[in-house]
Image (cartoon, rainbow, N blue to C red; front, side, top):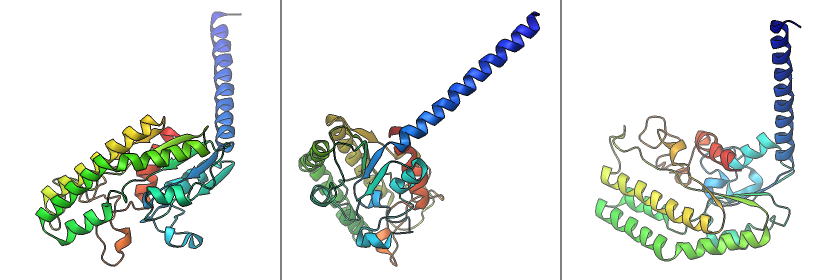
Length: 269
């Protein structure tokens, strides 16, 4: 066999082997995803408030078909999917009412929790309606709560998840930065208030990541995916204050769920 033919034959054989292995890898990946039993827990950032397309059966929990758990389910077709995340949930609500679907066969759990415990909604209401000084004081109170009380509450939730689903991979999703500093907003909160709110989100994320790591869970930081898409960015994936639909204020849009949260879950699931 001439050298050129030998090289061509060898290349074809190698290409065929690579294609065969790649095909097998894709098939195995799909089979692996299909075998997953997935449970989605948490608060409004997981239920999808702000994304629209709510499941009427979920009532005030406002679970959206555009929320990242539902999007992951649609893309991966897991063996089972339970979606118990609920708008307004605090840590105690998760342990009291969301853990029912968890069991020893659960493979994947996602959760965002802690923002309501720390008083996020009240922080934003205070900052929008009251003075800068009052806003900054309220943020300081929230940060103190994150230091003193939230870690123990997160421990309770994480321990309960581990007890009910000991073999599960648990992905804890954080909260996004809310404002692009020096951005396009010409009214509303002061730059000092926006800076303090972003700092409080970072502070909450850092505390949550520490507790997640101590329980052997994976933390999903959404800061990088939302960068460039904060309020005041001109391409926001977060609702600003909306007096006609106050509940959706400061929550991710459908684009925020699909572009901000879903990629982070995908990379860690």
